[in-house]
Image (cartoon, rainbow, N blue to C red; front, side, top):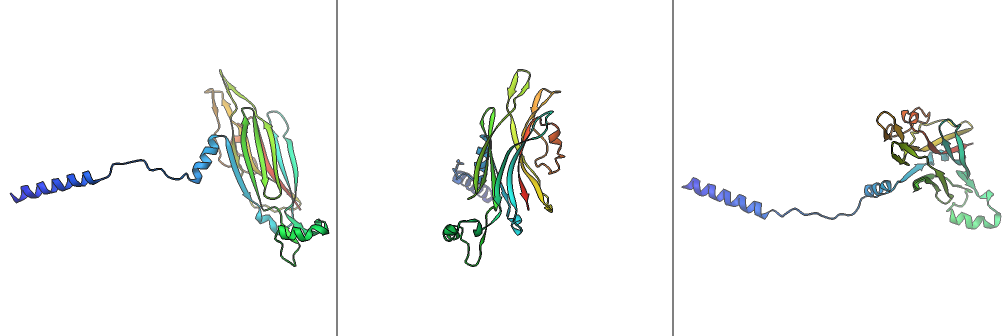
Length: 230
């Protein structure tokens, strides 16, 4: 009898616990940073940011460039913009404006130089089906936009414009006189003739020597980079 009562009590307790558990529900949370990037990429918008502070040990003149690579053609430099020196001096500013400039740039008394180029951001987006827009942003120095044409892919009865970016790997390199540093590749997919499909697969980063296998397949691409000169 005691065993029966004990079993009944355990069953009732189990039923109570099951009934006491709240029903599952969806809980709304705040979007995360990753959500923001996912939305942008779904809209064909890509953002890259590069730190240039390690170059501040010396004075360099920086230039931003864009090169275009097309089948059976020599690479073509379609954009070349002098960004100025990464370190600048008050002596470059007219004397009557130096005091105000010292205040704006927060240059301590006794010093005449300030860090002018410390970082660079690159924004890539499709403006429409056949045109992409590149933005080069250096805070307090430059915001420049460049529109570039895209090439159409065709396979069977299907055609599209399909481009994706890949960042470059970076290796520490001695700069003797000047050095071109590729930052971002923006490349077309390609048609797999065997299966009649469009592909874009391969390395997630491109080596500076341009030996990446993906470059053997992409028919058209752009490289956005900077040049540092002593």
